[in-house]
Image (cartoon, rainbow, N blue to C red):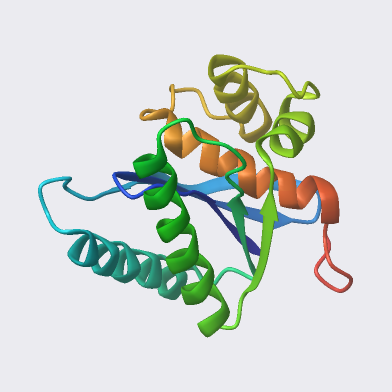
Length: 163
């Protein structure tokens, strides 16, 4: 079973694919979809949409887990994150995936056991849980893997998909 985790953003949208077989979890892919701030927003959203569609086509995730943005001090950043989230969720539903959202605190609790964990602690725990030796850069990729791990921590392995 594959879970696609997304740390949404218009400039940088982190993605991470985690495979679960029985109780084993492994990272299959992680990275960032970047769009240029010099391009107009509709073009950037279309580019993001195409990349998300490709990820879903390539990995056929059962679930797409998305970090829910609760607060942003910068209104224009919040708008881009919201637009990116909408694109991701619409593509996932269109492809027949289940979509779940988690708050940053839920993700931190599931991955690090501490709702106030910082970015470095989260990246370290993601690497530890998935047995990844190299640092994950940019950190948006680690964040996205953390979102996928949160789904697995909350839901485990569906019946009939174990061992």
